Image 1: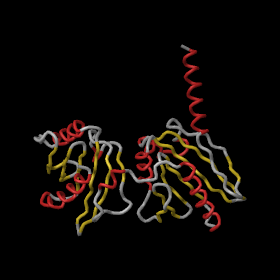
Image 2: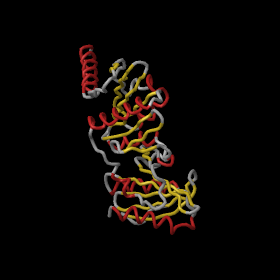
Image 3: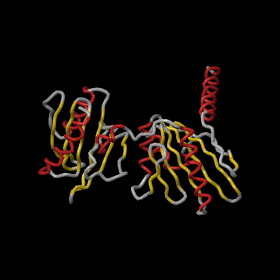
Image 4: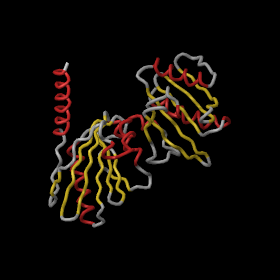
Length: 284
């Protein structure tokens, strides 16, 4: 038993070393690399980012590699967060961006605000920051970001489901990904969300894609059951009902996709139908 325990520890240590070796930090001309951080995992991420760690772990956090680039008193810190897949990397990136930032053509998407440059590419979320406001240091940070993006490569597109959301009225750069408990319901998971402003109306649209039609139908049944409704069509349906926590809900599904709209009144079914049809028709 003791031998198996020791072997397990050794294998865990080896896997951590391998994960660390997969990241090769690029050279930044004129700066010295300072390697003083461990490779963080879900077990010790809290040591680095305190209470924010839970949000990262909930979105498939795998490990974090950190390095500092130092030139005199100027320091540029690079953090490379690895997540389980491209969608999870987008999810954590989107949770920390603001539409007011200046967006960059970097990776799948990135932005700069002050001395902070954040972007995501493949299954990585990259954060670069400096407390210096010197133009040369900011340019060096931008150069580092380009180097890191080229080094990591990966999928440089936004998640595919985001392209199903209609552009009309959509609030730009406010799309998010919710991995668990969509609208507070444990039976609804893994949804992309876009917010809309059409005239005086403000509403949110959620898109969920399941592995099968049966899974989508099961989720729809659970949601309708919570509102004392029963779905009749076996493969598609369209309902409006009251959610005790979220008010009026428009719900529709076709095959393995579900669309949920919140924020509209019952008598605004024309708007809901327009957006539901635009989304579901794109992939069917």
